[in-house]
Length: 220
Image (cartoon, rainbow, N blue to C red; front, side, top):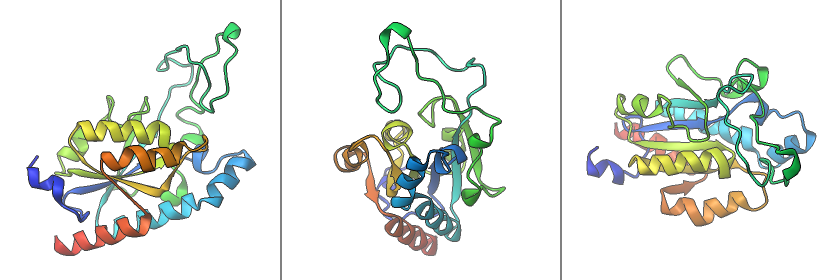
C-alpha cells in the first residue's frame, strides 16, 4: 500500500469503505424495552441511516460484517469467563459459558431493513468478534484498492474494538464514527472513544465523516 494513502484526510470512494458492523435486527431492534430506549436516546439508528446515505451519495461501497453462528454451537467454543456479555458474574459451580445471542437464519440475524445493502455492497459473514478473522473482508477491500475503513456499529467494546485493532495491524486507515457506535456497559464506549481509538485512527461524528466522504468524491 502506498505510504501516502495513509495520510489522505478525505474519505473518497477511490480508497475508502464504509464498514457497518453487526447492524442486525437483533441489536438495532431489540425486544427488551430498556435496550430500545438506550438506542433511541442516542439516536443510533437514525445516525447510521444518515451515515449510509452520505456514503452512497459519495459512491462508497459498504461492507456488512454480520454474526453468522450455526445453531447447535458447532462453531462456538465454550470457555471459562468470569462474567456473561453484560458483565454479570457467572455461577462458577454451574460452569456457565457465553453463547451467541442469536443464530444464522433467524429474523434477529438479518440486517436491519433501514440499512439494507445494495447489490453492489458486500455482506461478510463472521464467526468471531473480529470482522477480519477468517472472513473475506480484507481480500474484498484489497481487490478494490480500498485502504481506509469508516467503522460503525456495536458493541464498541466488543466487535468494534476487535475489528479496529485488526484494521490497525493490517495497516488500514481507520475512522471510528462516534455517534454511530454504542455500548451499554458502563463507560466503556466513552473509554474507547477518548482513550484508545484516537491512537489508532480518527474519531469523528456522522456529519464530519459525511462531509469528508463528499469532499473526497468531488476530488476523485
